[in-house]
Picture (cartoon, helix red, strand yellow):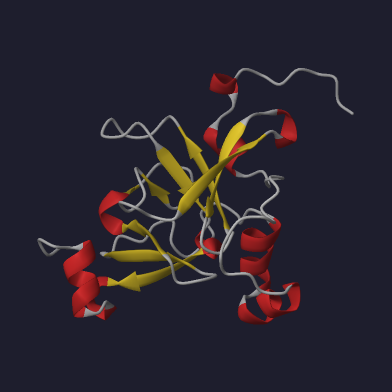
Length: 174
């Protein structure tokens, strides 16, 4: 047990707060429930570690941190649409960052007090996948930075979306 008080939130830099695993109990979250064996068969080891064990992938060494192509980011566990490339920006953190989720996205929040700090953990409410954390240091439009692990996401480029998806997510085109 560590009795040293946590530093004030403003002193914790992004890479420190983003890079730590989460310890929020997500066992009761989600409508898509598979056995641990089925999740391990469906996901790569890194995807499993991040989305099911609340791990964190390395910054700047993940597939979507610098993706600029238009498209939609889905949960890797259930293909639930979560984020649009329109809301993605370069936060300098080394992880994909979004100013907001898609309207009506199935994203839930939990308080994460692991590692001597308080953070807001975000997860997919459809499948319980740990996505990352949301911070109050985002762009002026929302003030939010959804710092998300690439391993929890599946990116579908605009040109691969169905016509219905293009109309839903990009009603005015790209």
